[in-house]
Length: 267
Image (cartoon, rainbow, N blue to C red; front, side, top):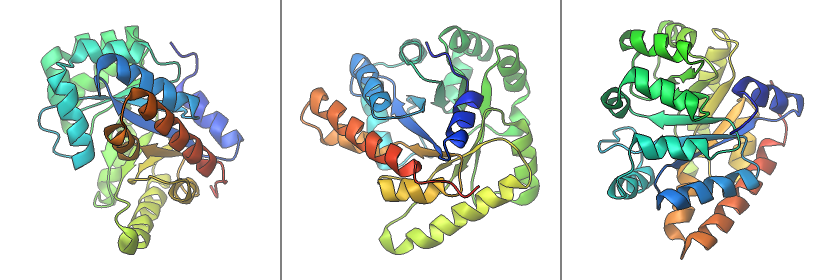
């Protein structure tokens, strides 16, 4: 169980003139126990906030690396019970990242109550629209859980206002880092999106950009309150010979990224 709130983590990071480092790791990947080991290794490397992935059979918004991890978790029969077990083992503020279908299947009231009991602080719902969120808003508020919706550079200004108003905890700004030649323009799109969000919300803004190096983390930290990293960690796990090597690798990358986000923010 963690003792800090999301608000406290972002406030502490801001007081240290840095962005918060947020890591994604699916529950049940490569196994249930090893997913807990990996999250401990991430935290040892300096991760401030953890997103526990709830694997789903049709992850339409995920890249190939995260899809592969989700398939492994599903083969391990990872469901809501296992996701909540992983959440309860984490020592920093922890959200669940989940498509809507698994939550709906489990039961909205039951899921929010059980997540709160497990010590979770919120949920990121990439495919849930605000128009379909009435029950979700009611139950997350009842259980004091943050609701994190995802916006993208393609989200227009009027929509940003509406989505940001229904977020709590932070806003997830999604984009793509891209390959070397395309990175600058895509990074500009993310910078612009964060700038547009700043005009409509006082909530922290965390950016998921395909960050995989300290240099990229430092670049994103110049304009965002949080830097989200997922695929880069999962890739290391998939490439590792065993869980011991995987844990060492993710700790090392987390240390590098943690140093990156400490290179100072502009806003």
